[in-house]
Image (cartoon, rainbow, N blue to C red; front, side):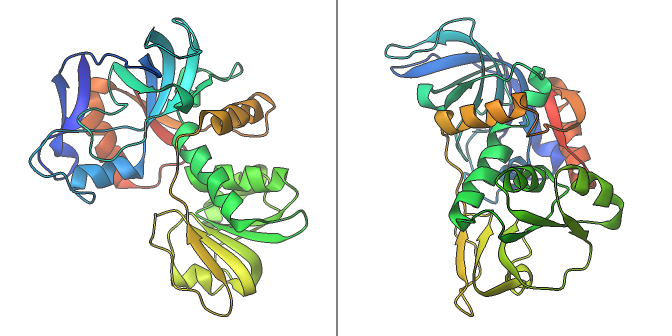
Length: 294
């Protein structure tokens, strides 16, 4: 099968599409024939060597939308099931940017019925990150939340999820994205923030700058594991480390089918053009996700 990998670190040109053995599922695992897989900033980090692994092949890709192709023992999934899943891992030999991928059965959820596989592929990593970050903030209806990077993939899902929970959301975004962010459910949109919020979800990774916008005794959550700023003024700080959770992913799928969440695709690329997709991501200004199609 074909898979996108890196064997040396660098820019988009470091991405290779190689022929490799098709993986086999073990106990409590399923193999999925990948129909689509989103490209995320973490893939660019892996490619550049941010997470280590020098001297070996590293697979790219975390998001999966596709069809169960084979199962190990002790799984409730069947061949032919249409699914989505998160393939959690930084420096494994193969990732989700491949024709087939093996994941643990409890990382899998039934695919949305209302969107195609390309759009479904934008859900696992970004929506799970958003909902797990919101969980850390422990907000109640009526409280105020600032989402930085509100027009981005994680930020956009966070806006929709928080608004659905009855939280009053302000989105921090460029002026040109204001209409988009309002359409996602933000009560207010700003491009230059001033004020104090009950909480900040820092999808734009502004760090201490965003922390300053939290009221005394409020909460801050970042999206890079263990990289949150130190607590000040009694502000509780944390950073989400996304986990593969099929049950939680199923809840997010339900919200897609209920039109609460809006998967957004910026552009699609063939798997063989993975390096081109990385180059497009590096250009910036992408609204929605770039998606690879094997």
